[in-house]
Length: 154
Image 1 (cartoon, rainbow, N blue to C red):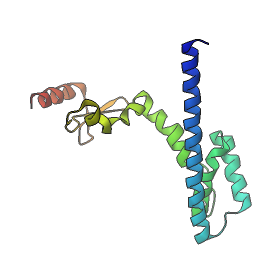
Image 2 (cartoon, rainbow, N blue to C red):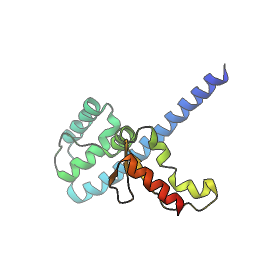
Image 3 (cartoon, one colour):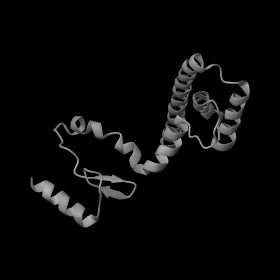
Image 4 (cartoon, rainbow, N blue to C red):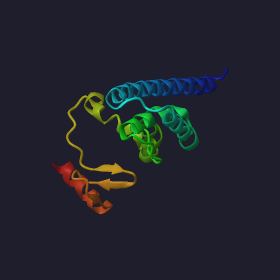
């Protein structure tokens, strides 16, 4: 077996294990929330649980999204189409929005540790193809250039 194949297989297995762990934690959190809601509001009906499971499978692609739909349904007393379960949002929507910069953005808090020097506040942010100032106002490239070079001189 070539090292390239082994590395990609190992990476695939690691990603699948990470995903399964996340799904398990999410299901447990949803179950705990549902338990408390049902203690206050009464049990969620079997018919509504079937509805959430079918919706999760047909619309979202997996029954693993049903537990959070059960939570939302128990809270509102009815099922409403269009809800985005917490685990679907975090696993599907957020990575789609963040694109390839998403994983890197989670490392920001490690800057001081990685570079072993105190790193000051951010000058600008790049989000979904647009530049933003510290006040989150959209800035154009010329203003960005001026901001970067004036900050560098300080």
